[in-house]
Length: 94
Image 1 (cartoon, rainbow, N blue to C red):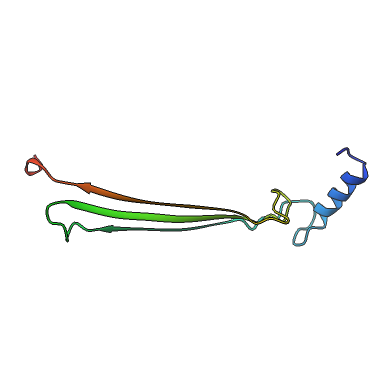
Image 2: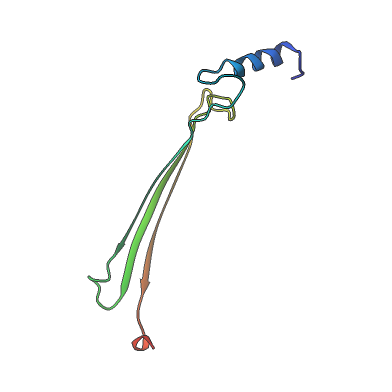
């Protein structure tokens, strides 16, 4: 797209008149939601130290096409994970 062409002028005008902006710029209402938890089961299992945990994340992009190709698409990413950790004290902690 060359400066002065119809396509350039149309794209320039679209960016300048994007709702919520006073001039050319980037509209951004991107976000991150994150939840994580951990539980220690050591009081239940007297012989072992047991911990269980996990997390969930959701990244969302909302730039209305001013930065990413998300004008007509839902761009989001989900991430999740979990773990179990088991340990045992040995040699009377010496």
